[in-house]
Image (cartoon, rainbow, N blue to C red):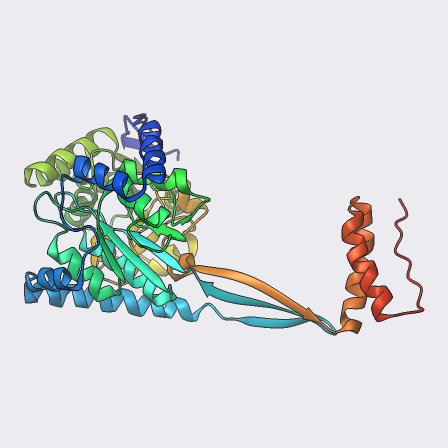
Length: 435
């Protein structure tokens, strides 16, 4: 049967056409030209903060002392889980070498980026989890320098919980600066910092655009859009839990899509009945976000069977994909396009967002069709090397000379010729190309 939409989105995550590029480019250009002074000027304007920008040890210790012990316990728990998972990922990267032909050995080597710039959102809330996900993973990867950058609050500075988390997870420097100016400071190596080789972490549309513009000069984790989530649920699912999970993700922002795909129309209808009440019970700001996201971006889709449900999920390629359905091994084997997968009622996106161990920096806006999320692999350069004996180089040189001449690259061919003449004097080689 064709898909049936019980609820169809009025907008998509790309419907917001606000043009921030020109503004961001202007700020980046000004800071690159003006250095520390210009960055501080923008910090005073946007962060409304005039305190110390690079936190000293005493300031870090003072912030740490303000964090309640119970919260520290929770942060340590989450950090340990993320660290263990990242360490397991790191173990999958092995240096290798293989003899391609007799006498010619090629290899692969994994080298961490030198400096990682980790952006940790601040604003109204302390994005503790973002510090855990980015700084911990960079540290496990082996980056030599890690800068954690977070927006300070006017007259206060960075939230103490973020300072504690960044320090616990291994940040070498904590920078009290937000927005484009913070990204620029890490990229350009301001305030005595090493220049970042890679920028990671979520942020608002200005931070995302700054990373987009700077990509190429530095590496980035991904091009980020509004967070999105899709739930696959069959008749065995608990409608109340499905509804709660949808609302929990809708509160991220007014343009955060949430989708329910089911083969049980009654379940879909029941979830639609429950969602408005759950939204109305949220605190005001969360409620406003969830109302707009549910009204404008949410969809409820009824499919004919589980294969059609899976195909729909692959088409949407969501950032977060939850399965609340029978036969979980079938879904794990079948599903192909997602940032992170949550199998069964006993786990949920919020677990991955905060404390379970997998990384919450994930591809959005359909990018999960071609890439995964942040991991130790993002901080690693996979490089290759080779060495050869003279006998091993011989067949490679002959092939290289002929291929190069066929391509019209005579200089390349002669780098092979000179070696053959040196290593095998007196021998004749057919290095011409018959066309």
